[in-house]
Image 1 (cartoon, helix red, strand yellow):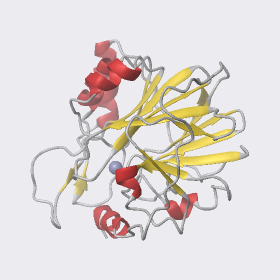
Image 2 (image 1 turned 120 degrees about the vertical axis):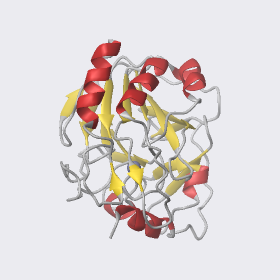
Image 3 (image 1 turned 180 degrees about the vertical axis):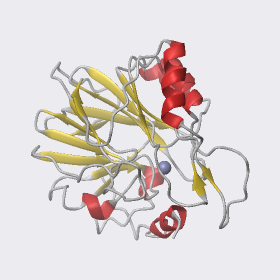
Length: 281
Ligand SMILES: [Zn+2]
């Protein structure tokens, strides 16, 4: 079965009614992000985990997948509070079943309100957030403040990127977005970024209902470098590459080599992390 068919099947897990949850704080609230180091782990595919104080944030986290070149670690954290953020509902970015045992009774998944409509919140608690609305996690101690910002999905689904501040650092995670014109405003509003997680595989999806368009459906390695420069990213970790799923889903050739070469040419600092790798920021 192709991954996209699986994605579409999951997409049909439509929310029977996402309970309205109120964002933790209003616009304009100040936030003490402190200066404690953030422990960062790359998870499978586009997934990352950020840990600061007693709070863990999983972004686009899913269970290890044998279709990936590097399946990645199991989802786990010893932090007392655990939250999930997703850029969009496709199954390679959102895995509510794998997240369910990670999230405690009072923890929840945060997504843009357009994305939240695709979830069945009987599996996990879902908090919808409007674009640019500050979301504090946890609501009480606010180790992180996050805002979702515009992105552009290659298959036409609702998708956002996440901007997160914590420990005196600012991070952006861009799911599997296309290159788009929103970079300029994102950079103006939130840049520069200490770290950007950017997709690089420039995937193509054909077959089923997808005509062979000849167009990439996520950023190419070179486009990711372009976006990083606009965002004024001080460091880029490439994500969303290294899969051989089916003849219907294929990547641009040699995405990591091309990204590394383009980043070096642009004078951009990058760090290739294998799924499971950890560093502190
Ligand atoms: Zn994807």
